[in-house]
Amino acid sequence: MNKLVLVCVAIVVIASILGLVAFIMMMMRNAASEKFTNSTIPIYITSLNDPVSKKRSATQRQALGKYGINKYKYNPALHWKRDAAKISSTFPNLNKAAPHFVKRPGAYGLTASFLQFLKTAHKNKHKLVAWMEDDVIPAGSETIGATGATKGDKKSQLGADKHKQIIVNFQNEYKAALRNLPVHNNDVYFFGHTSYCEPTPTSVASGDSFVRIARDAKYKAGGPGTSFIIFSNDAVVAIQQWVRKNDIDLPIDMLFMKFIRDEVITGWEVNRSITHNHMFYGLFEQIDTYCDHRKNNTIDN
Image (cartoon, rainbow, N blue to C red; front, top):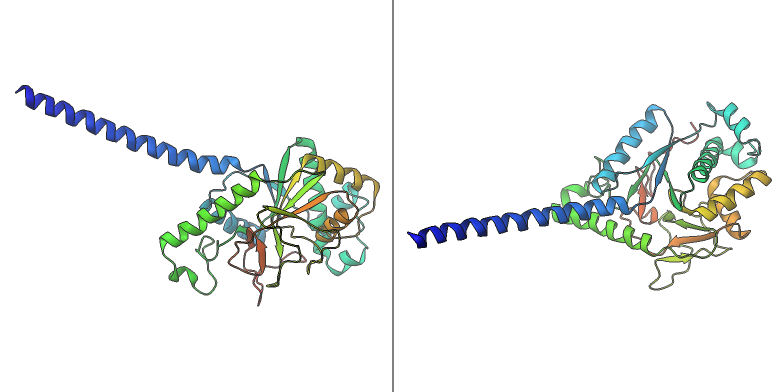
């Protein structure tokens, strides 16, 4: 009888231990997921309040959630036409008559939206802060169907294990980039650019997470990518000071190259590309934008 009691007690103890181990492992997995989410710095997504942008933002939220990025705020974008009066009064030195803005009026609104983001970042005094456009998605999002659609029906060709591998690869690369942000002076970190399926123009420094953008770097789009950028507080302050003293007649991608050439900021670009859509270089892609066609283009509407 005593042996039977001891066996029962042993079974209960073992079951309790196994249950405790399972609980601890579950908490560790949840903590790891939460650690990834909380490791991200403040992200401000710039988006217009219109039906097209709302639909695009919903697609983006779906993809970001799939990759574990769930904490971000919105920077209400300024529309070049609907918000013209507000833009001209708030940013009088933003030259609407500049040739680049006449050719692409949407770039005028996007540049104003960036200036508005800077004001918010400066006010909140974030040590680091990220700018993100509302059509930007983690690398591989469309490949695994995280946006609800895929290009070339790739989703049907990939299993769940491959989906997980793509997500984990992005998370690891993103965390590694955040851990290895170089520090120089007024630092700005670009997480990729639109390459139009051509080689990156920046030189590759083996082993470094970022490469410094040369003053004479040639980007096909006129400057480094504006899809996802991290700014140091020093850079935010330096750009704000420059903006107060100068007229602005360039869209933000070209403006960033001017800042780099004039040493207003130190530009760094992520030194690794994991994109599946080779229209882009870096860690992020854009919704419905490919080398051979583009469905996603509402900036000038």
